[in-house]
Length: 326
Image (cartoon, rainbow, N blue to C red; front, side, top):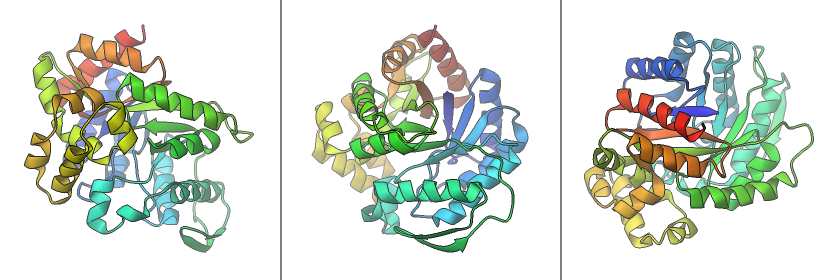
């Protein structure tokens, strides 16, 4: 997979333009991110389904806390129908910084993610489902035929989430941009693959990597501050320790994000955080970093910010990926 994350902080018309440009540039999968304070990913995906021809389309990633999982399954199934079977399902525990605003940060967990996509798969297969676990459903079903299969990618970076994805899902969207993190993720995935369920196909470990590329490397690194702030704020203590980053500073960034003080949050991002959590620089620098990441990952999703100028950056990122995979 060579994917691209589209963030609906932009108007949907703009996302459609970016998505069609990405398809022309050689990306084969488009994920639309999901946060309550941005536009609806499913509204954007519906438009993209109409405007594109071959790329796979899906949320990247939704969580089973803000929407009832049965409703979520229906929304993904609608994308599958609208795109003639090109849907992919990206699901994870959710971003702690924004879920904190909804009183849901403490509800994040592995079990809710696993139960949600297992129930979704049964619904897509035409079953009526009753479920009593992290959520409740009673004789729920979808009233239309769903083009299947719909590949399921689990978004996460904790050890248990990585292993669960390897055992149960089609792939892992690992929120990481550094070779050291992908090396660690590969070890977790290998442990999970030892228990992989029969009947599942080949597993895809995808680096869901924050990328910022430009002809001016310094400008690319400066543009990386906003997404790196969110990544640092949500990073687990072992990840911060792996990169020798200040946990108190990361907590302060998270507090500023939750309060809506984005300027302060972005200012607190250090160059070391950018190095740890973003593939940032010129095309050659990004190509070298992606090459190192792909020593451990099977594929790459180019995530926010893409670059200081998104239109040129998505082309530059595709060039860097081509060089990395030559």
